[in-house]
Image 1 (cartoon, rainbow, N blue to C red):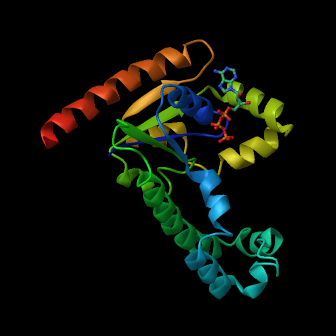
Image 2: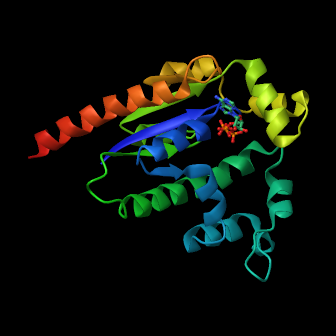
Image 3: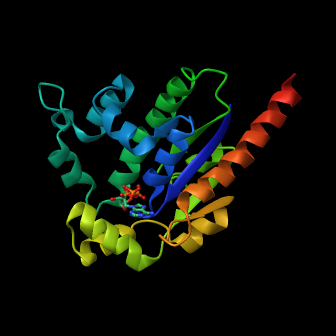
Length: 205
Ligand code: ATP
């Protein structure tokens, strides 16, 4: 099935754009949400985390010891890379299992991930969308949504690739600046992906 990856910086509105695609009947895999869920569900991942960071990574009731893990990976690039090397393949496994449940009548799927480009998972998508918004708009949204300061938001932004860097890798763009209609832009992309899905289907027959 045709796979579309969608990403954007924090507060850009990638989840909002995905909700519009969902209204159009397109299933969305929210990789960041799934990544959190599988930390306590994927047996291979749990085993890997315990081996790498100790049995105390999990409490006796199976819950993740976030404080323990955060304490190890915070400001430790090697440990963070080790954790990512365990989590990313587990997310790919979860995506494959999810995709297998999607009916063949669905024309294409969307994979939403904050670090689609940084993690390299864009390479497993057929095409990609980058959602962008001006800096001030993102700050305003996140201060409202999360009740955080501009400095805290900036610290999070600095950990991600810039829109300029991501833009070089993206195939399509949604400008969510609250001036151009996000719905119109999603509709135009949806039409485009439907055409591609239709052509692929004809090609397969
Ligand atoms: P994060 O990565 O931080 O979760 P995101 O890129 O998924 O962010 P959203 O959660 O979609 O961004 O949007 C951030 C906030 O901005 C939300 O509260 C959302 O309702 C609001 N928002 C997004 N787009 C618009 C818009 N076009 N008009 C008004 N509010 C918007």
